[in-house]
Image (cartoon, rainbow, N blue to C red; front, side):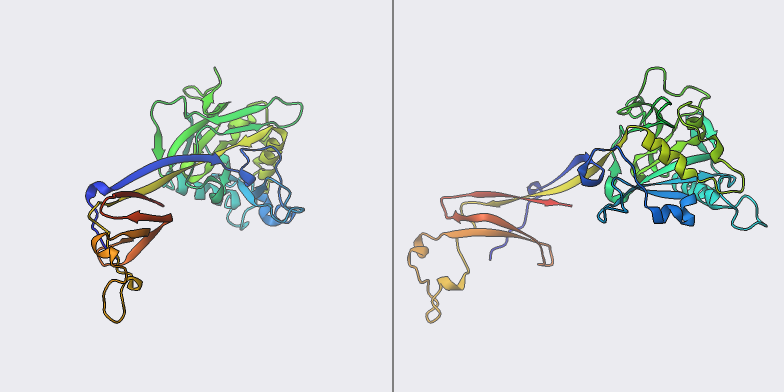
Length: 335
């Protein structure tokens, strides 16, 4: 075994962004949405739904794709935990959870476009679906019924010249449009509200329920019942099934270390393999190796300064090495 210390120019770091379809089976779009009856019928069904791309009641391998929840600053749309403490129910807790996650301040308010909002429907994508982060330019098409027009929603990532950040990372407005661009005349304007916030770094979309209700496409006005369960997730779930689909891609930055292993003509030509040496005399069994040594390189081990092997690269076939040959091997480490 022979060792050689790497030079700084032998080590190169590269980062590559990879995008792919987010949904089950590498599908780019979900067109039909399902819930699990046991979850919806339970008490938690009043506050959130788990959404599947196939029916979990008949398909045992179906997995959760995202969740729907309703948050309300004053607790409307959910029953109080305690009748002696009005306005404190599940919707208020959900609102507070997202406020802490997104805004990082329990006194802050959500701002959709240029208008504050005190209640919303949240879409939280499963972590395994969006991997590191969501790719900008999602498409979500909603409709309240077959007789109402479709509402096409996307983020405004293509329409902004600078990116806004908060405690959840990047923030984009949800607008009427497709593929990251607002339809002409359908973006939000000063003193008007957008359809919500797109938070790609935490896999979350907050939909401005008030704007959705005022769009003439979806009726959610009756969901905000004071101190009573309003079955709020059902409104958005029905609007999804009344639309034409939800398209989303994931984005992941793959970092690679490239290590260039250089075997120059005068290096690595001798072997320490005991099978080449006579056990009785300690001499080389093959005299030709005295004047014309050669080896066959089959693997490369990478060691740290403590002489600990941290990675091994195997070659597809052994490569012959002697004083007339130089080898350059590239080892790629992905993490």
